Length: 343
Image 1 (cartoon, helix red, strand yellow):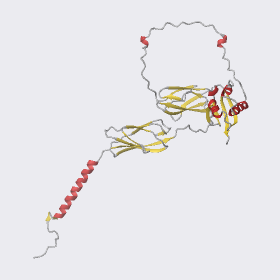
Image 2 (tube, one colour; image 1 turned 180 degrees about the horizontal axis):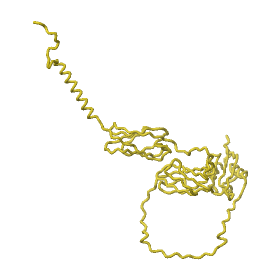
Image 3 (cartoon, helix red, strand yellow; image 1 turned 90 degrees about the horizontal axis):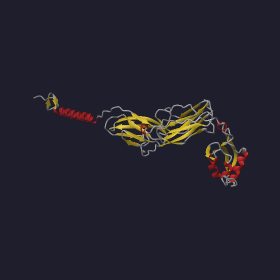
Image 4 (cartoon, helix red, strand yellow; image 1 turned 60 degrees about the vertical axis):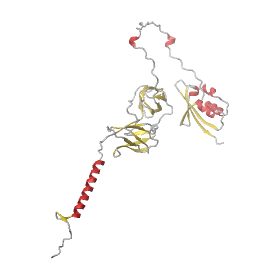
């Protein structure tokens, strides 16, 4: 009886039983992995991230500290998790966030923990832009420095010019206005910078910072009667007026006391010794204690606040005083240069 060279003792369809068992285990594992893959597969529907806030001049750039609104176009019911790139997070379709540091940040919105959309933001410090042109230290822009969102605010130029160009820096949504007066309505709170250019001259550029406060909601007042409910007005009575030469004459220019710059310097030096008070100096100024004072060419105060700071304090050394006058020789600004003595 001859011996067989086949090492397999049990066969089925010419394959050993152990091979069949191995193939069965591999098949079951493959089916399990495929089922897990199907169960874990999340279909991501593309969506966009919309951002709203005061633009800093470039796309997706905003100012430091302002509130920025984020919203997605995602229409599902799943929770959206936000990461603002500065360790700040939030949940919801529409959220708000403000950055406390300048820089570039990546904002991400995640759905189901897997579907992610991102947006690059640039945050910068809001400051008056530097210009190569010379900006006059005397600012002719008059108007409020604090306004409420939604309320119109009017600004006026005190200097005569052939052309006027009013604009809001870094805000192309505000059209340029070309009259001596300009009215702007700011829809949301924040800090804005008004710029005025005269005669298309880069050496005649002036700026003013405006703080826009949140809109104040007040209780509704009693409704006024409509025009249809009011009784008709009587016809106006027109009186014929005779010309009055005295009334039609141009108003006389205000009389002001004129003193030289050296006299202003002497008065301020005497104030540091407690020998001259604010009332003595105010009589030579257009707006009294509220007259503007430019200190050392950089800082703006009023003459009243400067007098309160230096009165009877000998450590202040008045170096130079220059009075800026209007067409009526009325002093509108005092330019003061001083130093503090080291005691």
